[in-house]
Length: 119
Image (cartoon, rainbow, N blue to C red):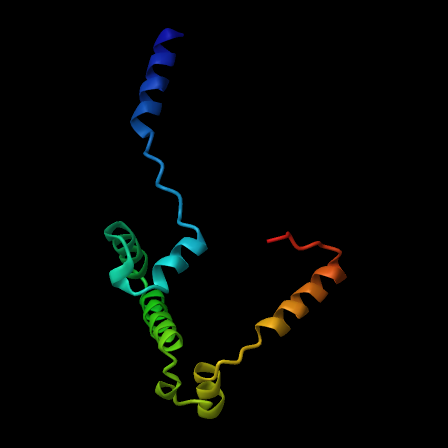
C-alpha cells in the first residue's frame, strides 16, 4: 500500500503544472488601450502587447480605439470621413447627450426596480 501511495504521489508531483495568471479584467485592458502609450507603465505596455500580438483583430482594435480617443481629446472631428456632419458636430461642439442618457438609465433602473447606488 505504501508503494502505491508513493508512486501516485510521485506521479501527481510530476504532472502538477503552474497555474497561469488570471486573465486581466476588461476595465484593466481598457485602461491600457485608451491613454497614450507613453502614459503606461512598462509592465502594462508589455502586457497589452502580449494580448494584442497574437491577434491582428485585437491589435487593430487597440490602434483604432487610440486614434478615436486622441480625436475626442483634441476635438479633431475633421479627421473622420463617414457621416461627416454628424461626426464633426459630435467631436467639435461642446454639447453632449450625457444628461439624456442619465435619465434613460434611471428610467430603466426604475422599470427593473433596481435602485442606483448613490455617488
